View 1 (cartoon, rainbow, N blue to C red):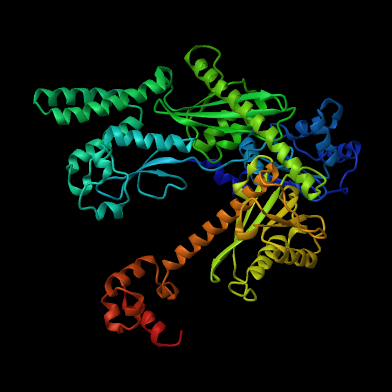
View 2 (view 1 turned 45 degrees about the vertical axis):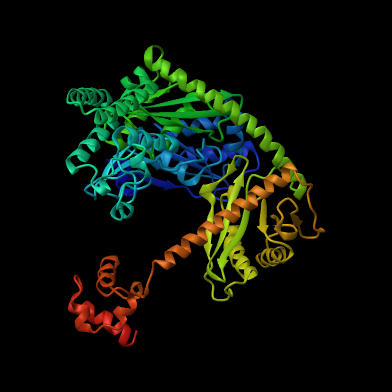
Length: 640
């Protein structure tokens, strides 16, 4: 699988990359940009590939793919035929780069990767590329555990998904507990139980931890649950009906009632999914709703005929872009990181859908069909998804109107020239100077940008432990010392907020002065007397401290930003403190990994006992050779 990704990271085998040196400085006019593109066109081949347009500072303006590079890029020379967005892009173009590929499908995959890497300002961008969650039946325990899993599939077991919505995972796990009585507790909790927990009492677990069910019977439940997730719910329901009838005939009414409750849960889920969804099998539904310049893309996921939830995106830079092109770009980007199903239903017809199908096949290593249904059950499913997308777009428009009012208030309050597109907020967290961490959160017009959050482990020797001012100085210095090298202007904040008062503001003033930063607005926000929220004081350079009226909408927005930075910094500090509590001096000894460390601690009970042990005693530990025992002994008793 993922054969093209191997090619992507070894371009010499599959692509020919050419970078033409810039011939002009940053263009000032449309005709200037057109002339630059014309010079590049002369040397372009008639082959498939990807082209990049860059501005004078080297920032990527646009990434595009082409079946014929020379013909495609030549289209930009007729600037009058393009919309305003493309004309502005042409006027800003200072240089270009191309990568030739073996096919248009490979060019499409490469285009999606480069868009994800560079986030060009004139491409359609998805702002949330978080991995989708799965359901995992653990494979390293005799009684498999049911749990939610996100990230790389490194744990042993069976995975089902992906679920595009996290709440769909939680709902499915709750249902599986009711219908199949699978345990969800951790292995440690399982090991230490002496009597059933509450889940057994409310009939959501079969309590294998205290032998309330035999291993063979539990395996049967797990088999039924995995069969259900594989789309065999009807067969499982028929089996349960037969089993309930047999128990009733044998007068085992209590056991029969448990089976009856499981059948009811199965029936409810089947009614919610509907007959049409059951006929889909494994498929995704991608729909687009539009209202003027704003658009909404909604993805519904079906696996085994079950609805695995839906997720909504509001992609940027879609003005004056055709609907089919937006969906095509969305599909190309989202399935770079997510598994692609064998069938994708779309609300709009896509041009050259066969090329996109081939690109997805290269990534997935199996056939993928992209279908635009016009009638029948599949069209009904698409129409239902469209209604959801339109409702989501209306809600988003309403929220955007409110958000714009707030941003306008922030702009006026801090004297910004334009509405802030990027606000950074800083806070520190520590306990008596230990495990000190600085936190940076980022917010924009669409809310918190959690992919942009950053934590700073306080590590410089000149920073005194417990010195809040010193920690803030280190954090701000590390964040802004290379600001002038930042090529992506969207990464430069319009406003910097610091949790603190006049002292923190003076630190920021000193740091920005040392770094020569004069174009960033910054302020400190401090709680009022007795840390009373609602009576905050604001501090800005060259201004007297001021307050906002209690209940003010702008104050509430700034409080929320400050509180989010506080939450993030505390969370980072707690994680660091937790990790430090799990380490020992054994971690510093060469050739002692997690396995040997565990063996030593199990044998001696503590790192201190290892330090006082003889070499002969250390050799007795399983997995510790004579040479390793010598290293451990000399670490404690010799020259370290």
